[in-house]
Each structure stands twice: as structure tokens, then as C-alpha cells.
Image (cartoon, rainbow, N blue to C red; front, side, top):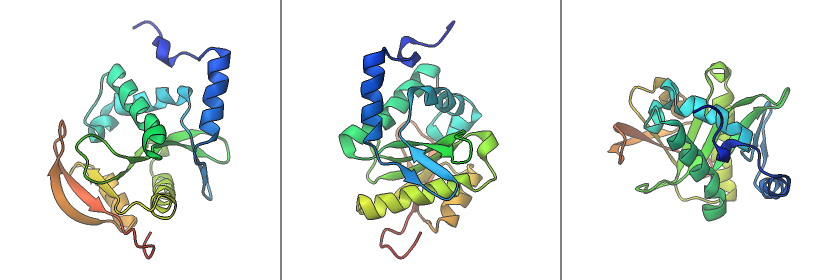
Length: 194
């Protein structure tokens, strides 16, 4: 591949203007240091960097570039179909894209999932916890979801530690289609936790 695929290139002006209007309608969450906003086309490069590299193992990867595109667009499309999906995480002070947080639902899922994908440089600063906490509160208070889990591969110790800091409790082991064995961490949706 010599350059970005057509789907990754900037949209024509009228289409881009419509995309901006649609994105503006999605929930925008603000925390002390972060903004969780609608994903933009330019964000895919960062998503692909995560999904296509070693960090993509938690997504069932590393993925091929085209697979990452379909994964990204599927999670973005969740907003139109289910009322939840992928947020891009920006640092408020400088607008740097740090990664993504998700309230998702994939084929085979029995419960909604809280997912978090950060760039390597964003690790170790508490950004994932701050973003995941905001998404959890949105899932509980705005969407009134009956349950929320994180499906984490056993060797992803950082994600397991994050789920525990968010007071998620181990629930059971699972083997999802196309994934290795994983552990399910369940979040409190009562309003008393998180």
C-alpha cells in the first residue's frame, strides 16, 4: 500500500461538513484533564497504530490494516445503531489524542462492554482510569444499562489492574469467538460504586 486508502482520505467538503454536524450530536464528556469526543477520520491512524501493533492483542490482533478499519468503523457506527460507541480521548491542555474508550456490543456479547485502548505514551498517567470512569458513569446514569463488563485477556495485567481500580470484580472466564480465553470483570451499576 503506497498511501492511505480512499476511506481514510479526507471526505469531500459537503460530506465532511455533514460528518462534523453528525459528530457534534454525539455525547461529549469532559473530565478534569480529558475530553471524550466523537471520533474523527484522522483518529483512525492512531487506532490502527494500536490495533495493528503489539497493543492490539487485547482486540484479538494484531490486526491487518483493513481489519482495523472495519473494527474502528463498527465501533463508531454503534452510536447510530445502539446509542453508544467509541470515544476518542483528548488531553484538554493540548488536544493530544491519547487513545479511545468504548461502550460496545459485538456479535456474541451477552452484556455491554467497557473497553479502553491507549497509546503507549499515554500509559502511566491515569488517563485510562479517568476516561473509563467517565464512560462507566455515562453507561450507568445516562444509558441506564443493566450491566457493564470488561472482557480482558489474562496476560493484560495493566487492564486487569485498571478494572480493579474501577472496583470491577472478576466474574467468570470466557472464550469469545476469535479470541483466546479471557476474564470478565463486572462493574457496579447501582450508583453506589465507581
